[in-house]
Image 1 (spheres, each protein chain N blue to C red):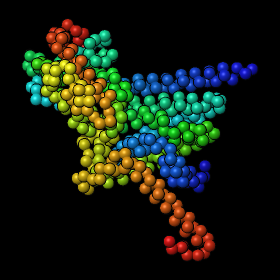
Image 2: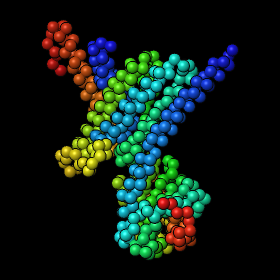
Image 3: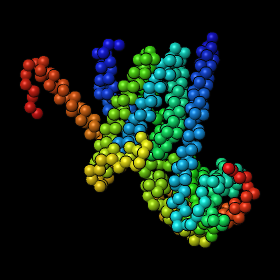
Image 4: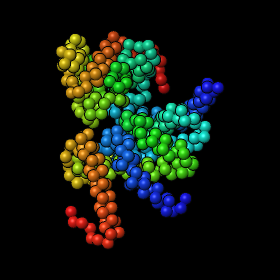
Length: 225
Length: 210
């Protein structure tokens, strides 16, 4: 693959086709666990791992999968991978596992994973599918982290608290900017607000980008709105 | 002719199911030991607050007793009892039991009972209750579970071991009534077990687990 092609793939996964921001897939975990940065990071890593592994397995077995039984097979593959990831989390990050609780097993229902299996992995080579899983998973994980950081900052007045859940060591309070925050942001409505803001910001950036490009091609100054 | 693809699909599905199952089995084998150690460590950390205000000097996890089913404790699986001593004298018993009728699967509970039959503390070890509603049984989320401290079968009397909505003595959780009911029932059952069979716990006739 050419470097340009690679860059294009990353641009797609991280921005143009971001599973969370644009395809709006996997909203259940996205909205439910992103109360803090470390939760977002933890679930992001777990989803990324499952997505890469499931893409690899689906792609490797694609020759033997008849179209009519592909969905049960995807579900089977994804469910076993998620169980493996859950066991690994329980063994190595027990506190984080306790915090994410049900949302680790619920990765099974993250439709971003089935969607990538169906749209991409079932038609492409193993290497290409793993890359796709990595790019899409990273896009999803970055969004989880961004929303987690935003909600934590406004809701609790801190950033990166509880990083010890992932990396061990003493309890980390993180960067504390204020002793308390706007509690609503940590509660479920805050998740919807944050996601809406993120989508709105993305659309605004895209529009500005498009506007400036069209005005350059016309040789005119950007319109003042 | 028409049934051949179905037969073939079945075989493919079976083969992939076998591969996936062995993958999970392998991961389980590799992590089982570590998970158990983690659970124990976490338990030891969480055993202390359940014994608040009680003097004891024995290592709690060393006095474990496993009660295989069938037994009169809540839950259908194996129940665990930790015996707590102050010197030679028994001070309390800690029960790890599961309330089977939680809203989303069993709720694993740690219940401390002092020798006089009063609850020294209750903690939820594991649950799958709804985040934001039923998960307020965790001490990290609310103080709900602390209301059982110091209670016994006489305080309140047996008929009052229920949430207020059911004419009982205990606070409920808004939006979640199945969860508190399950927990109260489990504590009550544990206290009854302690009252009727409590002496046997400290006589080492039961299967000892080292």
